[in-house]
Image (cartoon, rainbow, N blue to C red; front, side, top):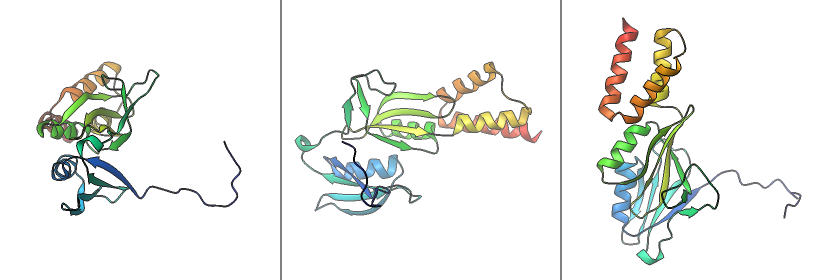
Length: 195
């Protein structure tokens, strides 16, 4: 039921999120060493750790250790066709921005993390989905990154927009390239630009 506001009090942001975890040290390691969060504080005896983004943006996350049977995984089934669903029909409740989608994807894979869907790129963003150690279903999103950076550099170097064929080729290269291959692509474009 919608009602008229009676004063100027509004929600203006988020101060924190709380994620239930079964092994606090494992979760702190995953969020800090794999996803790149910064550990603000941890009380392992008490069972709580506070992690935050290194750039200070957004709310911090309190990882709170509890019994496995008391962990409610952050995901849900959406009853309609939706483009971000797992193989079991679950939708992400948490979406995280990254500055390098493919590098983050590689780091999660190297750490033994469970990737649900491989990176996909659209004209404006790229994303993939994965699970944290407790089965929280998360989507990583890059608004502008390797593909977009290379596309801009190539357009600038060629002094024209990329053709559809060139765009598809670049997209395919970025989607399948490892972190080292991406660095190689960047170096080639830098050399082309310098000549």
